[in-house]
Amino acid sequence: MTSVGELLSGASARLREAGSETPRLDAEVLLADILRTDRTRLIAHPETPIGDGAGERFEAAIDRRARGEPVAYIRGIKEFFGLAFATDDRALIPRPETERLVEAGREEVMDRLAAAARRRGLDPKAVAPLIRLADVGTGSGAVAVALAVDLRRHGVIVGTDVTILATDDSADALELARENAAGHAAAEGMRFVEADLLPPVLPDDGAPLDILLANLPYVRTGAIDGLPVAASFEPRSALDGGSDGLDVIRRLLALMPDVLAADGVALLEIGADQGSAAQDAVAAELPGWRASVETDLAGLPRILRVCREPA
Image (tube, rainbow, N blue to C red):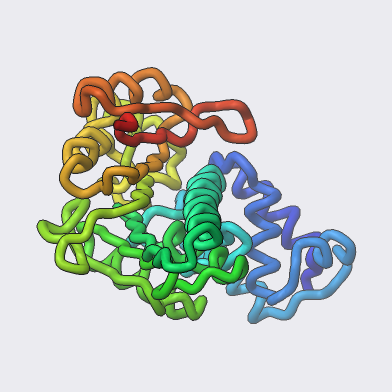
């Protein structure tokens, strides 16, 4: 009977030869998933024997990984913002850097709710506003669902304090997003709409959006073929942002005057080398609007913040 250590050693060598950038990690994650345990236990007990059935399933998973298929697709799940999301080739795999977009969305919602509470403290007749938020190009729903769950943890009632519109031009991706919302009991107060960026008429009779979030394709067309082979299993349309990576973002910028409230804000994920170019795109598409770039933990450009200049 083969042991954990022997399986991991052989699989790591095979994945290394196949060109995996993280062969040992890939092998550990896949074996832990098959055994329904965690990597720490595998590492601590390499002598543990593995039955033939589990060994065969592991070898099949390693075969798929050796051909370049992403670990997330093989497992069928990807951890994002502390949650497990169903993943398959219907949508892009959630990336760790996108967690900053969820944080930025939550901060904006909480700031607006706090400001409304202060106004009600001064004027008891003031009405609490309903915050309308959209996640454009939702894909697997990771951003929208993670935000809904996070807001719930902070005492925000999705559907009462805030509504979340999730859009995508892929019906298959939207179905995956709905599955993830249901899996996290987060569908209440969320709407899923198939649309190219945004529908012709927004929900609630076209009421404007207060917050717009988007993780749209921003990889340069010429750079896609140079990405790790795992990216070739993901929908190309979810990666390809045109010659400079900003084509889809520009299309969304052009819609903002008609869909964003006067005091609304858009928070868009961008590439680490697109800070200046993204701000230039705002200046060209939205003269007189304000654009700034927020960095991630590595100090790299990550979130493009867009809003109207105050009157």
